[in-house]
Image 1 (cartoon, rainbow, N blue to C red):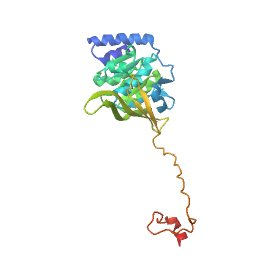
Image 2 (cartoon, rainbow, N blue to C red; image 1 turned 90 degrees about the horizontal axis):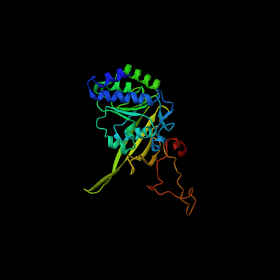
Image 3 (cartoon, rainbow, N blue to C red; image 1 turned 45 degrees about the vertical axis):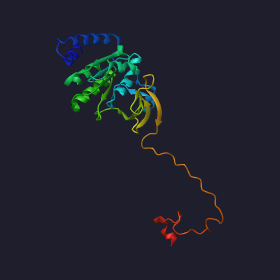
Image 4 (cartoon, one colour; image 1 turned 135 degrees about the horizontal axis):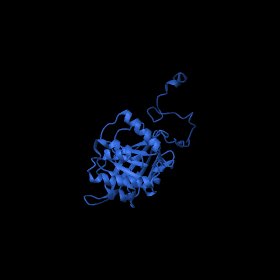
Length: 273
């Protein structure tokens, strides 16, 4: 595994390679080879979106290109002692991750692996249970199948930041409709951002959505509103009928052109004569 990681990161003369390999040895010492957890924990605001309240171990999820969403998913796992990694995201700010609750002592960053991003992610899956990666190139179906088998064998969950669905993924988690608060008419400071997060998985094919602050006032993700499942219709509420006044409705004349003078449906034409 050490040789694979050294080859993936760059030449042996690169000073960063030695530091990453040192971290790899330290993680190997502290982290079990396979996760014993049935699920990767997520923030409580996102638990209703997933069938069992967490991410399935040994699978892949497709994410929107949202640093806040990536940070929110890494924060709970790292806060509970699991190692995480972010690959191929050079603009992901360390300070922003910390404000979202990510434990930086449990985080590995490989900002720019170049075309070897898939090899890096595959090597890290040996020891890191949760990896977020932004693909730098297209992958072949055979490469996806090999990576999927390794994730399943090692108990690693992969978060692929991409605008297109990842082949053989367990599901997708998307961010929509951002709305920032705090700015007035030409003045003010951005305080928080409300977004709609929608998840759809193999076990729950009907998309589930929640409106959240990402981040909230304390840096964590906060629920604003749980939205109805997509594709469901609200239960119709029967409208009360107005009371009859004067003669019974059967005897009351209906003036031509009134609101009650409507054409009969075709199935009633025969009855109307």
